[in-house]
Image (cartoon, rainbow over all chains, first blue to last red):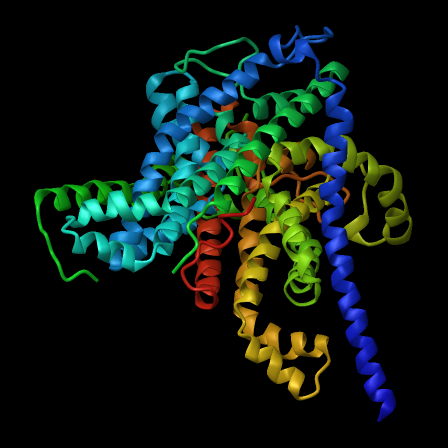
Length: 281
Length: 312
């Protein structure tokens, strides 16, 4: 009897210990990746890295100024297209999404969130690149926007739903028409949460590569014209990492560190905004 | 809901505009299906069902069979699941049941941070850190001990199914663990308390009262992870070797559907492009089915929340 109790206790402790081991094993790659990014990436960061374009193949020196600017432009344009649509769709789902159409939209948004981004890439190639006749940053931005819309719509919906009913009722009681109550009271109250969701989505697409391969294509030169092929950090990392030159590998690690930094800035920004989030109801 | 109904053109306009925004989502879905199907039509007509079962991929002779990459997609995802699922569920149990409260937030955030690392950075790390590590410490003993099995036969060049599977495991772990965690947290505490009151140890309470209650949600989380693994592109294309051969050896290079598209699309024309669109169509179909199934399972437990989309 005693031994049975002891055995069960020991088993309990062993299994608890195993979950601790699982947590440690899960964090190991995280620390390894960040350590490698910093160790290998930081050494290639210097002034040239940020202001120069890649040197000719095989030469030393050069930087990724074109890719940094390209990332900001493509992500910026993509967000400008994707965020309003995603947020609008999310507000719809929260405010009018009770019916069958709402359920369908919600379900398809979740399904699209899990769609491989490379498929969005070939889709946009067919719709934008082929008709235009050439690759362009704009096509890349459209691909990123398509990836953002389902993500943002679901986070927006969730945030708008958190707003207590009493707020809307107060606005309606004051004689607000429904749309003003929605736009100026409910959505405004949910705004910090909506911004959080938007920032998380921006962080996610800033690191996307696959949909840009057939749309923005990449460019070793400095370009700011969105109608032309443009480089991003992610595309640059891919080309440099799979290329044969030692110097390229060095730049790839630097670019990865910078890209990770950009992603984390948006991620941390999201967390910062969340702290002030409307938490009631 | 509001009893006061002020119906004016403002209300109508507001609703119409929002409906248009919301309609883009089903529209995108339909457009994706239609576009992929139309673009894939030449190979669907030319090869029919054989496309999925034959393994010749020859752009010169214009003969296309996708069996090796379909196999590679499933194989790499299976390796990833075998490695990631026990860890992810362990982490989720640790974070909801056993971890001291002050640790729960930070450790959970750190695990979710894995989901914030861009796929191309995983690929970079795979090429320059993981593969050398495998070559030096992991593969030699595996090859000596298990080289006689088909799973570990062949020569290890670095780029391999094993490398792809491990990278995928790390990438899907945060998704599985964060959704499982949410599902476990949704289990009512009366469930735990009842088991403990009956004299169960803490582990027994988790095993016999919490996990069964959350089972369909945890299965949903795993399938959600599977969906991610099936469609992951950049990290895989960088470490898998991109070889159109069907091999069950973990040590040999292979390819996946997503990797083939990423690798060949820009150079493809004519029938090869159609073949790549058909690969895309198949991949899209598989991930839609997998995700739909997972969503239904997770929705049943943690109703309505956009689980998994918030990971950062």
